[in-house]
Image 1 (cartoon, rainbow, N blue to C red):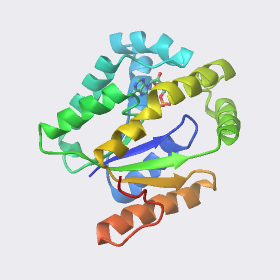
Image 2: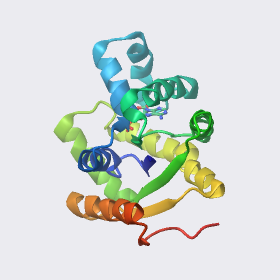
Image 3: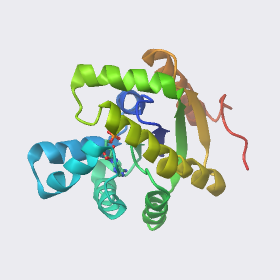
Length: 202
Ligand code: AMP
């Protein structure tokens, strides 16, 4: 199944996507990680993306769609992936839906990690002091939150309108408990049991 782990910067989606991917043996596809690897390699793509990422803005949609298209074409992605950081705009979501539809596939689930903005700010500034991500400074963070509200939050409405299953996850508790909530949702889907937190169908 194609699962989108959705949430604001600092909501914990990267951490959770990695844990859930490991537990369920599903590939974790993080566009932020792909871009950071390109920056580290010093590739043409990395050189183009680096200043954009450092400012907290978004890398252009066409570039991101090409990256995801080639990643989803790889053999290990055919049974499903956990998408982290993509789609981040409605045009990206539309392009994703179209590329999946060409292969008779679709987004199966949105896991929507919800976290209070004040808690997010604390987490990101703490992460900055731990792993030194160059876009974890107060200015870039403010820009990333603006971009999230303006461009990324509408992606959930896009999938709500499409009737895609959306499950809200409380992202505030400690990491293990959030993982537990997500695995409960995924386990419920696998066994066909009803799960908590599902949004009613439109
Ligand atoms: P992340 O690790 O998901 O927080 O991504 C870090 C940065 O990479 C973002 O702030 C953007 O500059 C860029 N980025 C990652 N994914 C995307 C995307 N889907 N569309 C545009 N830019 C992206």
